[in-house]
Image 1: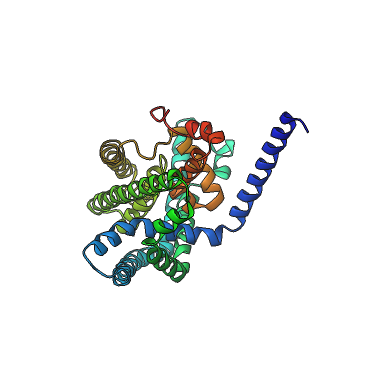
Image 2: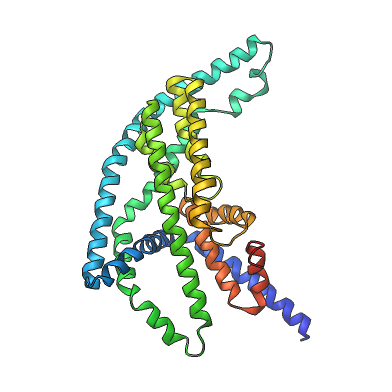
Length: 342
């Protein structure tokens, strides 16, 4: 077998294996997603664990304190948001009917102006009431994580208990040189910094959205603030998706004027947080190009659903780390990065 034939065969086998792995991840998403979410929580909690252990708090006690804080926070979220979700679900048919009525009135107004829209199939092909229904399905999808609460909690427990011994195990595995350990340390530090700062900015976004909606009188402001907090983890389009239900609800409750005000409020909050605050506190982020971030959002969302979209940047950074560790694939890592990385 010639060298060129061997290289071609190797590439084809690698691509085939990659397709099998991706198909396997998609098929096992219900198992993998809670585990990824557990890692996500553990990374956020790791600085607190380090802070407690440095103050001579026993590691086991520190982990138990963190788990108690997670349970308390989860209970508060369930208490505050769970009731809102239940009430929103009950009121959903009324909101859909009102929105459909406003849409029909708009079509009739166009007809009065001599613009015939009903005959073009718009009424049949576009149902604005279903837009709010999509929000309900999104909340159901995110709510499925709470059904695996105990699995996630125990996984976080074991990850945090192993956190202190993990670097030692890595150094014992890598007997010659520290290059791979340096890569992994760089990755963990980058992901931890990204997720930590993103959590702070997302929390600020959620609080500002809640305050704005309370002032405007839009129903379920805490629910939409929590949704803004969660979807702010999704790069580029997360904040836009989070604004849709609140704007539609303002349209149903108060009309187009208040809906426009709500949309402008979301726009201002996202400009301040996304374009002013985040670049200053996060720098250049994770070293990924904007195009790669957007494509990773689509890919991981297809594989893992909403949680894949939320964690698309850290997951892509993991792929970039793996590509950087081998000379034959470093050129792909350069393509994934920004121009400043090359």
